[in-house]
Amino acid sequence: MTVIDLERIRKFSDGAKVIFENAEALYNEAQTLGQAGSFARAASLHQISMEECAKIDILGVHATSILMGAQVDEGRLAKSLRKHEVKNFANAYYAEPNAEEKSARGRGDTKAASEAFEKLQQNYHRDFNAIKNAGLYVEFEGGKFISPRDVVPEEAAAAMMYINAEFLRRASLFIRLFERMLTEPDKQSEFAKRFAKLMEELRQGCASPDAIGEYLAAEIKVEAKARSREK
Image (cartoon, rainbow, N blue to C red):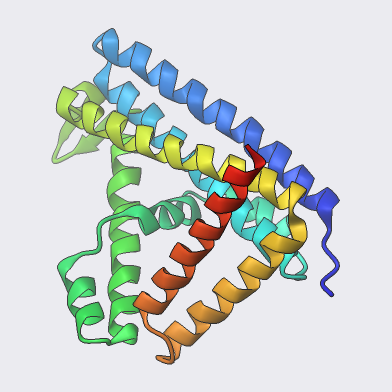
């Protein structure tokens, strides 16, 4: 039986809540700036808020590893939480797959699909980090100084607002998942192990995405029935 370090999961859960509070505060401050017409700064704060949301995902992944009996190097974790690239790569998992990845998935080429996704991650990091920096700093390009207000329009700030709102919604679900890890550690541990096994089978071509979807749907139904009985 897996020995689960609940105290460490509790620490990560508490940390995730602090991070979520900060992400929400950044969102609200971005809204205040946007309403005042400071669209460049607003866009930058929305991106920083989304990076905070990514930290919650990263903590969740490490907490899941603990549920499965793995050890977590908190020093390496701390470094990961500070790297913009790592956080943007994590957020890229929520992006719409590009045509190259969809095509590879359609023909069952997992290697090509993985390579296409890695390119998407690189592009996501480049584009969103560029928006953040453009909203904060004056650039010197082509012999001219360029102000943030001249490169980040209202439309870009509005788009960042909507994307950020979705990240905050998903982050709130992860906060709830942390609570379930603490109240039902054995159950969540078995779920994580089974899901990891299916994902490995998918990587090796021994399982299909449909099989994973069916497993998740069945688990959701079981969970819904259990919750309804509790009421």
